[in-house]
Length: 395
Image 1 (tube, rainbow, N blue to C red):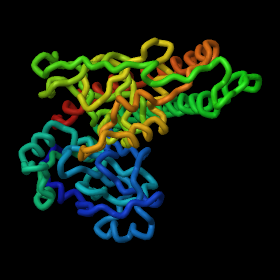
Image 2: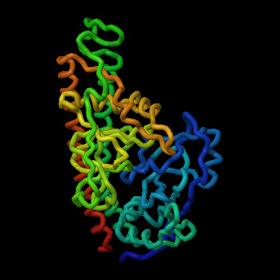
Image 3: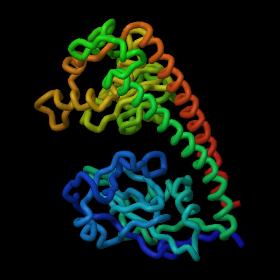
Image 4: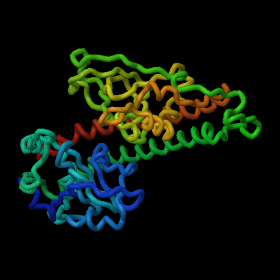
């Protein structure tokens, strides 16, 4: 039995779009999915908006997302796909739609991976309606879009092969998250709560342990402002735009390609710390694991000494620093922008040399492990991406 061309509608129980408005925000409740929750083909639910349980019925009239549904973006940022995980409780956000497959006709994981195939991407490019402000996929005709469907056994075999790569990436990502949390806990314990080794026998005056000093971000860092015009940027080097900087995740493990760059960018080096200065409350802060170029809407920070890098990283990544940056944004702009001239005056503690050495040993060990895992994930992802088109060639 060979591959067949079928419509999406013929293998689905339903295709539903999300609400065309935004509900009242809530401090807790059910999840209101947003475009920002799509990260590398999965839903990242570490930073979500909530909708109250009382409002949830209103916002799930069209559909209540359930396990194994495929969600996708149909407007503005296209070609984002993810699978609803187990125990999800929430509703679709704006510019999002959902596909509920008929399990008797198609394997949901195969359809999910098919959406990343060159054949499907070419079809989306052909069907996209170009708008004055945003591009969109017409949901009225979307159900009639054709897909290539292999026999059931082939669907499972393809999906199982690709899932194995994604499972490795997810496991590594979980380890990265645990390592990042360990680094943040250590920083808070030693530098915020002042429960560092030997604190019991150390005098603390006005919040400063004896032998420590108060300094500013400006004292321990400087900005790298090496601008490169688009024609002079070598093709094929990493490009980190604001869209590549995750929220509340300090390892910058994703990037684009400089070949797509059309405007002036800043240069960054490995271990530089990038801070997204537009809407700083998004908490887009992290350290680079390679050399490349980045958006001029980022601040590229470098430590004045290698020994100061761990303190710089954990200080500017802290919630307190991010809030300080937001509260002191430049005025007069439609979008709040962080102001370095104020940010650099933020006060941090610089410990005496023995404590600094112990802290650095811990943080350098953690970030070294994070780098290894992040590079592994990029290799695994590249391998999967090279394999996917071959598996979808109807062989």
